[in-house]
Length: 195
Image (cartoon, rainbow, N blue to C red; front, side, top):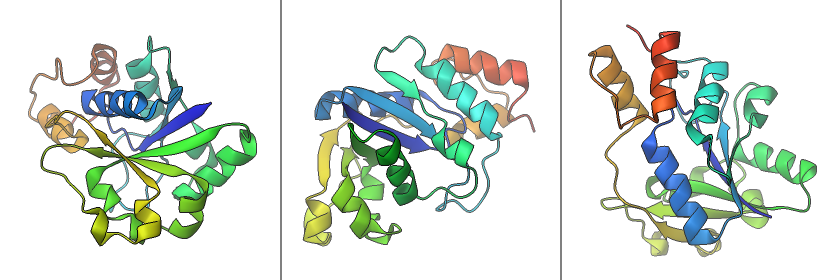
């Protein structure tokens, strides 16, 4: 199978994540997309606001009903800081028959040369780089061997982020149509992100 990995803190997961995953699935002809909440991301300065069990549950609620989306707790079960090369190594050990793709935004494509063990990664997987208005990358600025590992895909622009959603929650604003309804209800029931 061709499997796309959609990593992130998902703090909380929102419609922009779902749209990005669906765009990557269609553009690259993926059989499935696995949403993989990270335990401790190496590139973020602060820990996620919600603990891992809540973030995983929100992902499960967000993707329920989509036949090609799965939640994958691999990085949460592993614990600690999650580096993509370690995750890919574990995935390939556990699923040697499958082909993995890592879904990233256009802003992260330009940052790929700084990823830990990028040379090892670029030999094992390909990246699906999601282009959206305002975020383009220039392949000529990347080392040629990295540019070859990136499959470009387009997605509509959605001006929403988890940071903005947490800010909206702190202000008591409505999150209808920004979060999947099951996630919105879970956040409310669990009192997540309350200030």
